[in-house]
Image 1 (cartoon, one colour):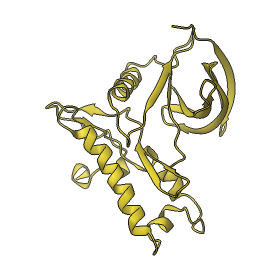
Image 2 (cartoon, helix red, strand yellow):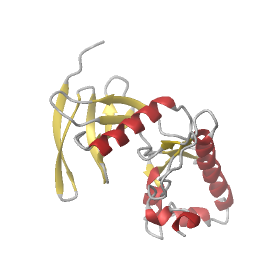
Image 3 (cartoon, helix red, strand yellow):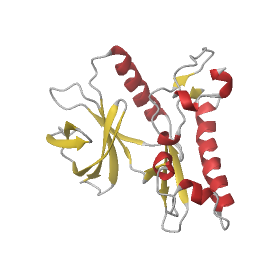
Image 4 (spheres, one colour):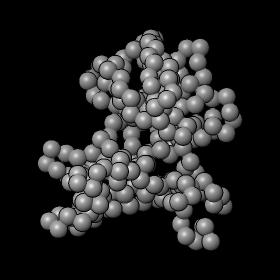
Length: 213
């Protein structure tokens, strides 16, 4: 196996400057967003020119964070499904506690579609209520989301995502206009296997009503 070489960059995420040290096979890095436990950039794999999403996690000093990140890595290595994000690579730079997860790149999150101006035809509400194909769009997106969840819930896996929300639903539109959906961010996922899971993992505003009650 060839030895990895690394190169460092600095990126601005709103009011924060973050140093990223990445495998040299990735280039053309561009900022995407900051998440609760990570910073995400888009990059190009120089070996095949594929665009990827690269997530820098928080340093692995906190035991709870380390367990969450390890769980996400194991799960992403286990699953293979067209409606779940695919993990392509992982690495920890030399002399660092930062773990990087490299996955396929999608175009936009459902949250970002919701936040588009109301005059934008790609605003999620406009696509859902489009009199020409809104029903087809809604049915297609919901079918793909449920198909991904069904795969996680099957008997031989029994994984519960525990944080389904618009930020964790990614979409990409093909040149023909069709939408592909993938579920991401499996850091809170748990394998059921007879366990009683806590009610408080899911983002509060997206918990099931019976859980809140």
